[in-house]
Structures are given as structure tokens and as C-alpha cells.
Length: 100
Image (cartoon, rainbow, N blue to C red; front, side):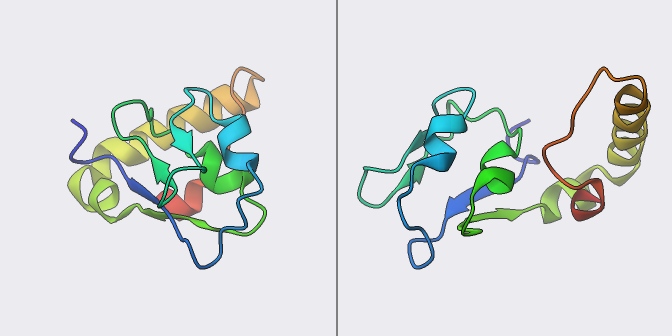
């Protein structure tokens, strides 16, 4: 299943090591002090919050595999998330249009 999820990468050229992503990661999957800074794949739950929280835009994400590999399922998933958001049950961290 991890094959279709997006790959998150920290761009070392734009990362200022402000720790915003690391401090806000719900699973503590980010280690900015590591050389190079890393997002630990085993801990990451692919929520996308790091990408959204980074003030420098240094977290890069490739949504291509998810878009291509599960287009129909992804559209249904986003539709359900939007419904939950309208009901106040969900708050998105990533722009839906960026995923689809």
C-alpha cells in the first residue's frame, strides 16, 4: 500500500531548519537535525501536514502515483472528505485540487 502513497522529501536548498514541520508532525516522523534532514517512511502516515505547514515550501511531494494509480478511488475519497468537512467532522491540511 505504501507504494501508491506520495513520497515526501525535504528540499535541503530551501529548508531553513525552522522545525515547524518536525514540531507539527503527528507521528514524529521528521528529523530536521539529521544530515540530510529526513522524513522517516516507516513512521509517516502521509497526512500531508508537513507540506502544508512548512513556511518555506521545502517539503516536496510527488502526488503522481496516487493520482494515476487510484484515480477513481481518490476522487471518491476526496468527495467523502469534502462531505465530512461540510459537516465539521474533518479539516483538510492539503488542497484537494493539488492531489487530484
